Amino acid sequence: MTPQPTSDSDSDSATERSVETVFRLESPRIIAAVTRTVRDIGIAEELAQDALVAALEQWPSDGVPDNPGAWLMATAKHRAIDLVRRRETYAGKLAEIGRTLEPTAPPVEPSAPDDIDDDLLRLVFTACHPVLSAEARIALTLRLLGGLTTPEIARAFLVPEATVAQRIVRAKRTLATKNVAFEVPYGPQREARLGSVLEVIYLIFNEGYAATAGDDLLRPALCEDALRLARVLSGLMPKEPEVHALTALLELQASRSAARTGPTGEPVLLKDQNRSRWNRMLIARGFTALARAEAAGATTTTSGPGPYALQATIAACHAHAHSYDDTDWTRIAALYAALAVRSPSPVVELNRAVAVSMAEGPTPALQIIDTLTTEPALRDYHLLPSVRADLLLRLGRRTEARAEFLRAAELTQNERERNLLQTRAQECAP
Image: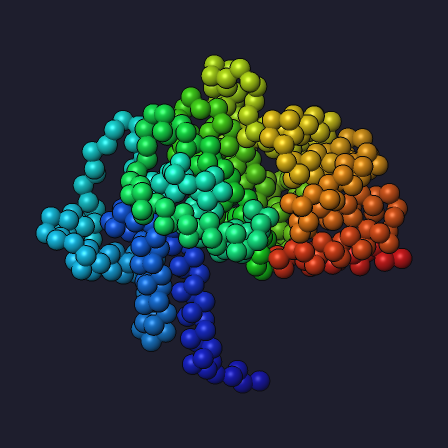
């Protein structure tokens, strides 16, 4: 059979997909770099979008450049120069901006001993400024740094899309009107923003580790960005136990990535994963970071392990186990109980129920789950009916389990998870 020639429309569609993919990967760095120039996050995002439009107009006819990320970056920076030319008496400022566009690397800027020479981290700390509410800080940084869409952020927050959209718009307006500096703060100001920064990094990693929507279970670029940021923070703040603890948690979680999907990208449950595919180097890094967290905590806090330290210890329990059955589920259940006291949330209780089911059996776990069915935050959370279905199946209540698996499949926005849940529902049929 003679292959059909590729139409121009097919070629244009492929180019558009390439543009969108590259932009999704590169937009955080572009926004961060342009923000350094224009000192306004909202304007920087608009300029990055302008570069995207230019690519959509030019690449279908000119072809995708050899380095598409650099093309987008250069286009956005040149548009930033045009903006400065239009809006300011720019003689001195233009010389400063021009240095960033030279083909050779610019000289290293002088910095304080504990400064972070990383525009992405400046973007995180700026978006986490205390003039914003905690919810707005996280939503804005997930949008700018993680490249997440408003629906994806809404799924991560378990709140309506309109709420997230309003938070992002108001946050950018507030940063502009308050003239918030594009910087990494020092001393007490840095410590005050650290909690929000850690939460942002944590949520970005989670979106990469288990995508809330789309055709793929994993979004590795998000995991890599979050892990890199956590590592940099660990070097910057060696006496902060929760910084090391978050790094340990992400290292240990990332170690399982290769085993979490099958040959065609389908999800592989923890109990079915081939642990020989777990990355031993990342596990070793995680253990090291956890030890640093414990050492720092012993000298800086009297309130016991923080939320990230408890989660990292849970991840370490899994990493130490040679198989699913060898896992110390009793200790994991106790750690989740401690986490529920230190950082209570319905999702923590859901995870505790899973651990209790393995340590004590499905009946006490189902009792925990049934108390969560009226939680407003979990109303559209697909993992609640998914976990409940698994417990019902273990109790032999197949018809009820099938209904719960189907409900979970309806709630998830991730195609891979939906297929898995539908398959499990079919397996419950008499």
